[in-house]
Image (cartoon, rainbow, N blue to C red; front, side, top):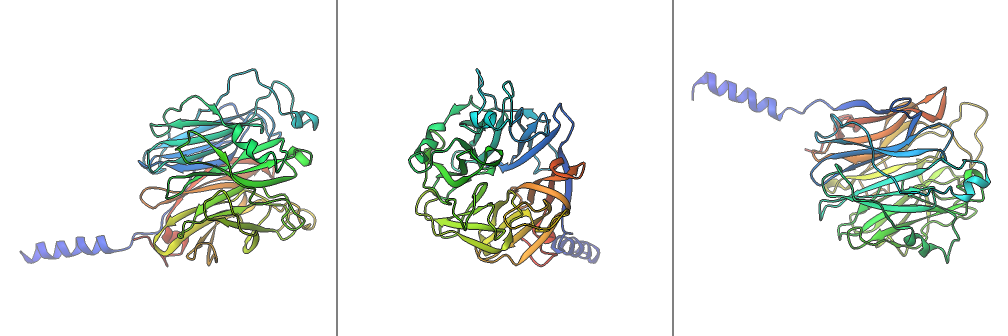
Length: 403
């Protein structure tokens, strides 16, 4: 080999071995005021077995609240989240349509408005399918399946009967899946965190308890688990919950609540459905009373990630225990010990930012879809659902990399 050729080969090898710069990119996927909808809220993310990224949300005709005319929209990406297809509506239940009586009783909605809410996707690593569950009027649940990476879905099949398993223990009037994404356990079981409410309190969403529904036949049938998080004087109104499978096969739930501790609630189960451990607050995970999300980044080093608005301050008045804090500073946290401690934390959006869902692309790139900005300085009216694409090097300031 000539000296010139050897020198060139050495340069190429050195360049290949040199660590790449940390990755951080952002793009708005759903923007308020576009497509005939005033706002887009309640983001969800899932990555299929083939690597297709599915981003979905609630498209709301008005910013009035959770009970108006709401559709479920989806966008697909076949390049790891770099570009996406046009948005499209994917969920619709044939009429006649009837409003949830608890919403009418509290004047939260009117007849003629149809609410589709709380979409949840689960990619099936065994079959390659995408399982998709959503709710209608917070009182009925439906299941769809896609066998072509979210291009098309089967007609909705009602699975509300699964929630009747909770009825002997809790006489619910309101039900909700997720939101965000569900999980598939290593043995194949599909698990979706849910919450149910008596519908008598504020916004007809309170009081509430949290649990899971599950399927052991790839979505053909669904059953109720046991109530994982009851409503108690200490653990007040548990609701929106995320789940992850731990290295030892247990399932960990991480829940929002209105507890005075303002910390996330954690409980575990051997099978994701029954035998839940005594709930506990996690002191490192702040709870401004907002949705959060978890996902496993890697089995190597037991890397788990958690994201939510990491803030307990209020911009107006003084903080009150058990009451909402400002939804700002959506941040990603990293654990190396299956969620026992979270030594790494980095902000994605220091300003107004709320609900979020987190996923991992096939190449290890981390994806987070979150509510960004507050229209008129109102953090309940998101200006956009923004997708952040970043890597472990960015999250850890170069201290950790997947490769």
